[in-house]
Length: 478
Image (cartoon, rainbow, N blue to C red; front, side, top):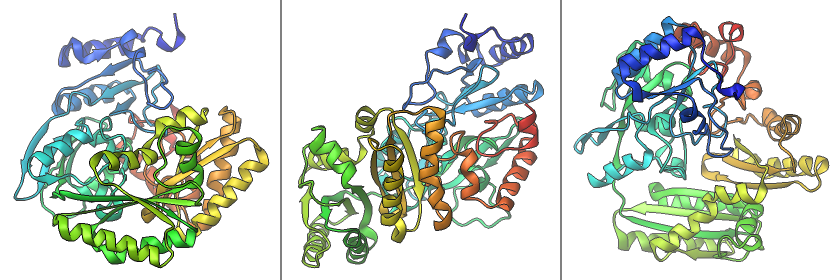
């Protein structure tokens, strides 16, 4: 028998029997039903958990955690499994708790502009529900069809519209979470202004399931923006690209919703070199940007957008531009930016990185990383793109191998320069297992100690996503 799917211990078997009795037999998956599932979309690594538990209500989740707490049983939370930092990995000694059945849209308040949803609801489902009510949920990611609201909250997701609407943290008005011992902490306030003591929901946003499992949330909605203008432009230099960002912010104001940069390495690979996408503009420029603006008034908005691009061209901030004239053309422009599957195919074995740093340091930082990688792996390749207006870059590195030693050396090339720049090793993907040992680059010893204190206070037996994000004595003992 595969050692990764060995028989559960007697105590674990008892716990699983209790869970079947409380939740129903179909809520507890074991054996081949577990191994058939993967823990992330990038590697397709099969799930090695002892079982997958699928509660159907927040109360069932609370009961699950009460039983696990009594048995000192560690658990790992599963949402849409679109993460890239091994945050959903589970060992044969752990249970995976899937929120796939907690996917309801509970209520929409069009006057208060809020939507109440369960944590397992896919992002796209929430977007569509908001749209049907004449509003919009502003968060948007390439994985919108798979990622879940709970996962978005747990990682404080960013995405394509942060420049206008902010991170997931800015979209959450209230939430409910279950603690390690099964207590339900409900802070489901729909109010924008609520200064009644500590804002406890902030503990769980970005905590990656290490402090509690989010079950429900009250989210902010925004007015629908029916008119969208999108262009892909080529910039002659990095200074021109940052100048273009300032120019579009000034000329479009709050209508600017996306400013997505692509280094030539990314743009050329996915268009000219691979043939996966037709190049809207030539590939000789060093930088490319997808600019998107959203507004209500189509005629005036279109005129402002066109004038902003024309004045940018006159100022030498862009060398060429392709303006989408239809939804299909818009999708084609975005496909170049969002074709992660293409990068996986073209650069495999691929290592993905997600960093943030001051915009003014980005050109030198990328050049330094490229030089360091080429010195060690002359045939290596690096694809760079990101949310420039948010100070966030994604780097995709391929050096011919991704074994543990090689990965560590590549990580050092990517992360070490961030220390002197005051940058972050994670802009929006989280820490998980993959980045935990590099966290001291971005967090001080006092910050790390406070994180460990919070973990110890809320999960003293280290049962929730153990070994993820932070370390502690209780975790290290397990």
